Length: 107
Image (cartoon, rainbow, N blue to C red; front, side, top):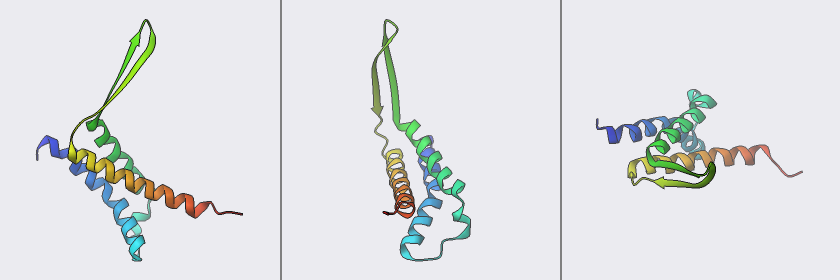
């Protein structure tokens, strides 16, 4: 396996628990009991996003005379890594939105 495909493949594998959980919930199927573990779901999302963001983002901070002057963020054109970041962000927003709607109701 090429090095350029390694991080997206690992990221997609780590996104599987969250995507199976969301898809099975939306379709009305029974959620597999192994996927109810929040460490597995949120941990996989976090690690997948972290790995692929480090491959895509380059951050540079500049200083002038000891003071912070500029912050430059560059996004690399790596389509597979960007796809994993996008899918991971959508899954994370879906889970956080569900948690908000489920726990906060108007009084």
